[in-house]
Length: 124
Image (cartoon, rainbow, N blue to C red):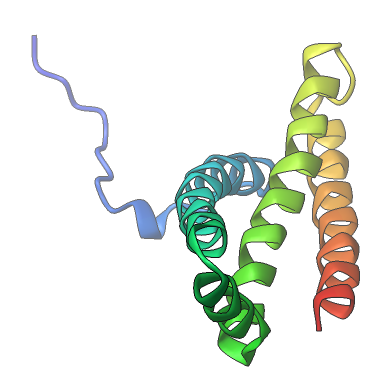
């Protein structure tokens, strides 16, 4: 039997719905948190090994690049938290319609954006 359905293998030409984009970025932020945790654990190890190590860790975290890295990890954590709450709400049956999923995705981006900005002000 010959399959005559069209095939589109170019994922960049597909118009993704906002709910799909927030779901995918939720997964990406989980991977980012995992990698960021390894970096933060390394800083913790460095700070606990000696007084000089603690001073070096404080110096790294106090630098503009260090603050940017800390802010990036905290931002990933905050986005992952907000998107995870949206997923839990959908598991309870809230926002399962097409319009509800769009509103949930918009709310996720707004709340996460506000939380990330507040975290940036707090860290800097």
